Length: 286
Image (cartoon, rainbow, N blue to C red; front, side, top):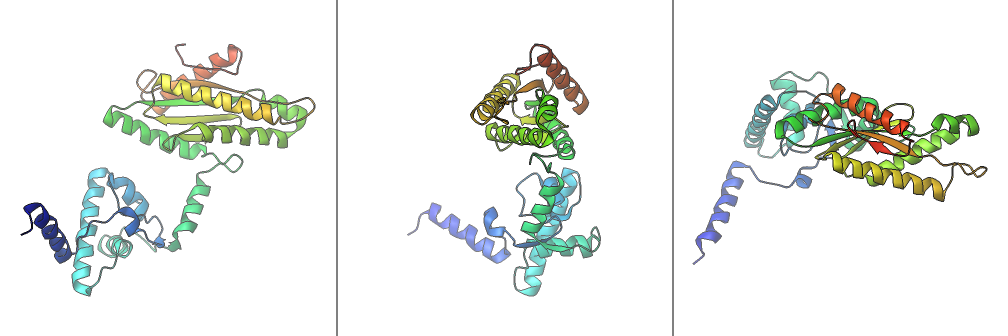
């Protein structure tokens, strides 16, 4: 006779088959086409998934209600049609016909949509994210840090003497310097970190879950990576031309709680680092 532990999973599976609700991992739900904004089914938070699903910005509680309604509609359609129409079709029907939130949605290949979205938030020269994406990401991470009492650091990095490189060797060489610095940033960052081109010769790093000491280590590693890159392969042979970076760091709560406060603090720290001889980093109080 099967044990109680063996019977329970079978009962759960039978119940799932009767209701049409089957737990699947994200890859099983993946779709090859989507209307603008469609994504795989969410884990939480729902607001981010609804934004990707229908390009709608909703508060978390409202997004969760919509998601439950989509799940109920999907089950109703399955019972009526005798087959599962899938997440994408259900969401399209819900927002287009039940809610009337979408107007003339467009069906596109996911790879095409991803490429378009990536291009819209990426700096063409360096491949880093652009200023617009930086601002949106920083606001989101500030909200997350406030909600969960987490750590967050912001670093501003400046390419030292880039104007001198442009004057001596031309802007094409200066552009190559920026690309090499951007590559060094990506080499030293985690997947959750965000590197953006902030201005002409400045980059900004958003470092979630990172305190001042951790941010200082990240900036130091980036400095070493840049030094190695330009030492091994100088920008110009005669004379050997290298560039370095200086950094300023600000941390959430210690240096401010808003976007403007953190930016101002990191900018002050960067100015101090420049005054002390460049090729270094600092914090506002250092």
